[in-house]
Image (cartoon, rainbow, N blue to C red; front, side, top):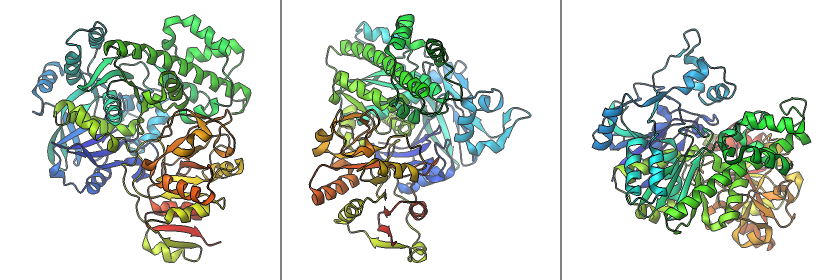
Length: 639
């Protein structure tokens, strides 16, 4: 087998080492730079990834590269890292296809165009925030970015419809044709120059990487796989595939543009998608409006743009939703959010239903469920709606369904499709390890001098391997709020107990305190972690360990984690959840009755999840947080 270094250059950029199919290291750039959603790959990121896996650069056999769609690849230290699109001898079929078609590839440079020539209120702020390192290189006079780069390249893919028809018509060769089509369209040969060494590899398609990341983590052996995000219905905006025991086969591209629709509707009132999703629960959707739009558009419902929707909405209610005079919790704004959420769910469900019915037919009714990935899969209420429709056990959403799963997915695609070193059955055998969210690095440890420096205000108690959770439980039961910064960090958008702020949410004051500590808006919901044995006591809904679905609360014994509409984005806790499992069991031993734990990510406003104990220590000292648990210490305030 091969040792692969995978690099994702887009937002949520990261590096992964995959050795003989095993993940040896996985590190996100934002956890090093402390710049949220940091994009681009630099020497520090790669060196950290190599160090964590104890890998020498000469041991790397191949490099897999991914990116956010349409964005070019900037080389921040050209002498250290750059690549060229060129044949590399790994796969003659791909090399020959590239040579014959290299003048036909589509080349895009979204960042350069957005920052230099297009006054785009959506793209300019995103790129400026995610790529702070390239701002000094922008030459506004000549409309250039004076830093070396390669464009994003892709094929026209117009013939994917032929593959779709082969599947629908049950042509015997459909699966083989799909595999051959993927090889030619989803892999571009490259030679990477890393630290002076020439290493062969491939640029792997964005949604194909999503597809492999989610498929290899799911126990479903025969399923529809659908990945979609903010690129909408564009050529690279979504991908439907079929997973079988023989492989993962691209099946169709759809007109679904929900991710882009949702994102721009949220930005219209100044919110990101996550906040907008939380706000929607405060409002009520209008069935007549949704029916009016659905009837007017008919089968073209997925083609509606956010501009058209907002126009329909404003005309229907005779209001100007973009008028800044409305408060965020005004009925005008919350009902707008609720209607956008409802319309998104309607479009997503229609798309998934159509695709699922076709896949069920293709597989002769032998389909086990649906696997979701991409940014659209972060919409928790929609995930739950699909689960209610097809069955809770028949839907899988991976923990890193955002772009943090791309590097791993690209490396797995190389191993399965190009190198043929891992079969789908071999991948399934290792599914438990792949599906773990705790694949990130250990935290940067505490500086020893800080123990003496802060000894008058803090108590540093050495962790006891078998009893530390009992100590934490006793502190939590005194209404304390604490940080867990222990073991390997999570990969994906959710902190699931290793990089978390936790508390017992007996009342709204606790959730208000946590939101105040994090400087979050008070109206935003906080999520509960629930032991498996108490789940049915508290909730109705899917048992999701990754906080990617919502449930309905059966009671209000812990109101601090129940949203205004009676929903909760629950983390289902079993032994796989490690730290929270130990803490909840320790609390259970003491009080011997059903309990919930508030769990939210350990980060400060506008910053990524903390992966440095020294930063967490400062957070403890300068806020209302009461304690900090690390790999070495339980740290509490003396006063």
